[in-house]
Length: 200
Image 1: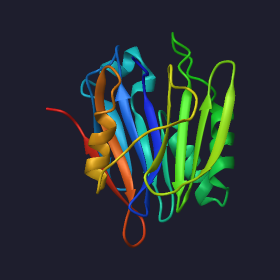
Image 2: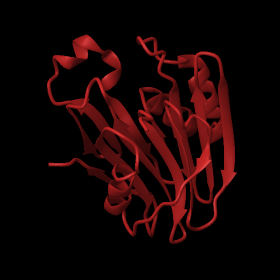
Image 3: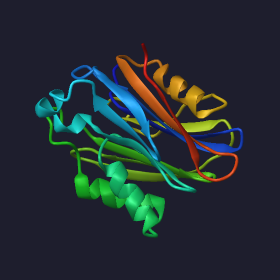
Image 4: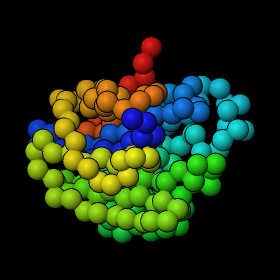
């Protein structure tokens, strides 16, 4: 099954995480890169941006006590709204309403999620539907939303003991056309550890 981009929120070992996977049929030549407190997805060939401006963006942004995951530039707006004092669920809702779905040939939905301590949020903006939901997380629990097919917020089994293992777990999810993956895992102290998985 091809589900497109995937966002996951969950909790493992008493710490929360977000994960992201790029699955792509049209632009598989991409990688994920850690850049300080964010993870950037971008094409290996910059010329691809002329064909589709939606393929480069921060898929994960983090602050001291919150991590945001999204399939587009809405990740930046969500984190900025949270840093300005807005609740994560409200920030996701506002950003998804402001941006709406992507105006590409497939009307690709925008998806987003966030975690803060033992709470998580997921949202999706489709052409004909908009939803945001809050979750109270317990250990070994995770929820997923994708741009196609898995557009409901579904429970998923997840594992890993660090950000790198969580990113690889996201890449290994049993859906077609994986490209790269990323994760942010709550640190033992404050903040989040970031990691990416780019196959050779």
